[in-house]
Image (cartoon, rainbow, N blue to C red):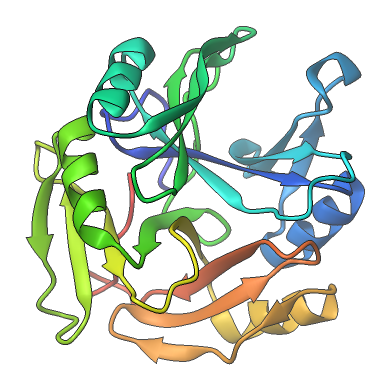
Amino acid sequence: MSYVTSNQPDGTPTWIDLGVPDLERAMEFYRALFGWEYEVGPADRMRYTMCLLHGRPVAGLAPTPDPVDTEYWWNVYFATSDCEGTAERITDAGGTMIQAPMDLMDQGRMALAKDPVGAQFGLWHGRALVGCEVVNEPGSLVRNDLVTPDPEPARAFYAAVFDFTLDGNQDLPGFDFTFLRRPDGHEIGGIMGLAEAPASAWSTTFEVADTDAVVERATAAGGRSDAPQDFVYGRMATITDPFGAEFSVITRPPGPEGGPATG
């Protein structure tokens, strides 16, 4: 298993969470898909819930009962060893801070921001919680990519904030896709330029053992899905949960030819 036991290098997608209007319904849905178990937080922590795989945290669910909330999405947090310093780089590069750096009990230090093209993301400096402790395994995070109709400012922004290098993708001729790599050369995700995208947003992809079976379970549990398709990196599908939050699943081929992963 791909266990993570310490903070990831700066710029690595390290945590994901989802605000939902019905926590119990969300737990039921994602348990059906990924076999997650849960650790529901106390009321004074807003019942923030840890999603567990093999007894280790892989994601968070946060109840958002405000009737004004009508849109829900998986939020990605990038690792940083210095929330304040990274927040300053964000604003210097043209981004906007939504939530200034703050401590979350003993768990870690976080912040929320938007990039210049309007995509939201978070920062995470782990303490008791280093982030996703299982990655790149069925039922866990495998990848995050930014989909945007305006990729050029996004490429410049993330390179400035996290010192990413930018590489084209010869596997996807005809697509405007740029790999994002940490200074050590490790790929952490990418930016997809898509003119017809209605807005800029970070997408979340989970690894699964059988894409077709997960799609069946998702529809049976009250979600929606497009038809699974074979892609250059594996068999993929896009699923929408009962609250309208979209994410992707992928079954990667075994061995080194398997698709790119995070972490």
